[in-house]
Structures are given as structure tokens and as C-alpha cells.
Length: 242
Picture 1: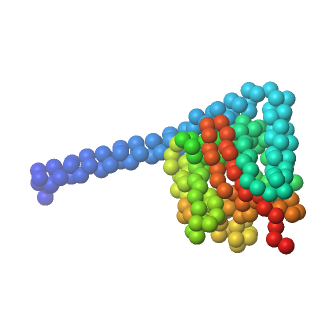
Picture 2: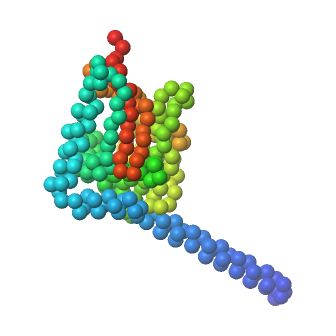
Picture 3: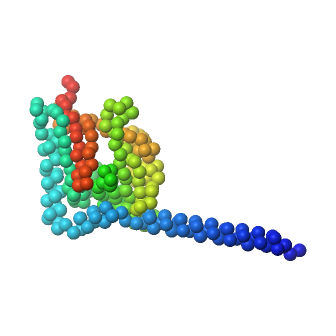
């Protein structure tokens, strides 16, 4: 018994709907791939800065911040304590990251995962951004960007930082996927460090710990002010309790 005209018409409609869904799905996938492989403009600027700056000049920039910041960090204020603000320009940080990061990590007994290439720091709309290029087994070379946020700890007593969002290229990246990937490649065995990564993946703010200044003093971070070309970090330095 041959199908009725109505049945054939329904099949044609179902086929057209299915074809339309396939086209829409393909378009979404293609767009996601294009966005994921797209290079953010700030990464292109970073590549131009590192690639086009003569090596002696880049070395001088990295060396200047390397010699300047420790002195500003430990310099006594008043009786050796007080509030101070440290200013770091993005070009200084990025020159140091390009030339010194690998050696610094090696001296600490660590190394970046082999999938990660360059690392940079910048800002967008007053929000600090850490970006790095890496090789994905699925998509090939890509640039990941982590957008940071600041606030106060749960008891409103200490400065805290966290991850606001992340992107692969220009495509939004799920934070838990990112932190899981970092945990896998960094090989973290410390339970506390793994917990911090999990909390960052849930977009929680993490209290910034007290920082050592020297063998007698510590510093609490009071705030971070992000400008187009630099970041100001304000800290309260105090002598340790006896």
C-alpha cells in the first residue's frame, strides 16, 4: 500500500525541518570554531611588542622592573611600616614574563606545561586579563584569556581575588573546564591548592594571604587600581607580632 499524499507531505516537512536543524547546528559549530581560533587584539599587540622590540631594549625593560620593585617593596616607611603603593606597567611585566618567567619557575622547581607558550598581562575595561597561548589536541593553537575580579573575603575583612570569566579566543570558556585543565597539566598534589582551583572554577573570591616583606615585616593587600597602561597595588606593611 503506497503512502497517502498527506503522509508523503509530512515526511517532506520532517525532512526539511531536519535539514534546517543540521544547517543551524553546523553554523553554530563553525561560528564556535572561528571564535575559539580568533586571536584577541591584545594578544596581537603583545606579540608585536615582544617581537618588534629590539632584544637589548626588551632586556633593559625586564631588568628595570626586576631591580626596582624589590627596593620599593622592602623600603621602610616611617619606622618601617605604613601604606605604600607599587606601580607596575604592563610593558614591564610582559617583558619580564617573556624573558624571565621560565628561568624563575625553574629556580623554584616548577615549569609551565609544555602545551603553554607565552604568557601576558593586560587589561580590558579596567579588568585585569591574564592571557596565554596553548596547543589544544582538538582545535590546535589557541589563546586563552582569564578575566580577574577583586572584592572582599566573606567576612569583609581582607582583600580577595578570583576569576570573573574566561575565553578561548573570543569564545566563552567554562571556568570549571579551565581550572580542571590547569589542575591536570600542573599536576597539583597539594589538597589545599586543588581546593583553591575548584573554588576559582566556581567563581568564588579567594582571600589574598599576607605577603612577606622581610624577616620582620608582612604586608596585607588593600586594593588594586587598574589603569590603561599600568596597575597600582596598595599594601599595608606592618611588623610581625612578637
